[in-house]
Image (cartoon, rainbow, N blue to C red):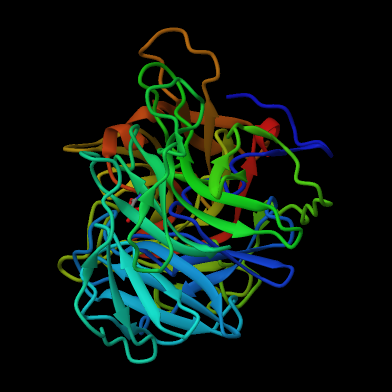
Length: 511
Ligand code: 6LW
């Protein structure tokens, strides 16, 4: 989907590209903060900051200690942390999420959204995903969750105070009323929800009432946003939240996907975060047109410095964009052992494992955020075996693995797991490389979304491609689930040292 670059009068959607779903947003003074779901990855719940709603910088991960995020052995792909709500209330930040792999609904607080966040307050009486938290004028705190149901809670103890009540189920017959967010705007309480499921039928609907408990009157124009049944380049639009800018204007953040290739289209970056303006007519929100290139808001845009392409592993702590399935410990993944190098120690598992026997893979990666991109890493495998991988989940990944004997490419697609290319190893460190190239020209219905060329970079810089694989097998339409591609480094045996890792966006049109 080639697009025009951002100009002074436009901005580019998605505003947070890559696997960043279920956005929840709040404002504190001139600062906006946004949090997303993170599923089986540790650390969890990426937190972003913006001054203009358009440009976002990741300032941390709310759940960055094992005491906050337990992803037990066997936590499957797309298990773990679902849909947060992030709010600023009473001089503090509040974050409520569900850990579907064990601990249920959890509430955290922080004075600085960059962290540290508190240890969790458990909510054993809240039985549903997608919890929202809202306060009445008298300080009464309401937790509203998928269904859509609501229960009064004490946010300091996590106790429920009284029985749950059913509030609203969206359009009659629509499946999956979920993602509720309750906002007081003017004289009304608005209950914003998603319905239709997070795939192509996804939609945003709203109802309003005079109290936070309803009764709620559905908006006559529901759904107020959906792209179902269209060939719009942004699909699956839903799971939204609202925020008011200091100038009084209203904005919606939501998730959507960008299918590529032929019919029905394959999306590979997961569900991404989009931004769209909202007007009010007769006290109902009217959502502006959502498109890849949007009219800029009426304030100066502040584009932050581009992220450096290379991570040299010179810092003692990994940058916040590095994530690992289920857990990461300083014993398995460290920059302290050899200065300027990331060392990964294998734990006995492979990229296919879900840690059921406590031998998880040692993998650290970052989200693929561009339709076309290149990753490279210089790898020293004299003491072990490991390399680079494109991971959608534990059953869908392509990997190039170096050992003292070989460099091999392995493809795992559902029940198939095979070595597709191999060559003898040269002595010394090797540069492994993966080029992801979006297919912008659809030749026929079977054209895939992208190609993934995997190989070795020769000392003179030329690319010795070992294989080129169809990217559709690492798409959500094939694999299912709620996540997106993560590109990263792994160790499958012994100890593997990485001198650097490059992530280079190649489609400057969408950067
Ligand atoms: C989330 C639900 C949804 O809990 O998908 O798109 C689920 N919306 O609201 C997982 O992200």
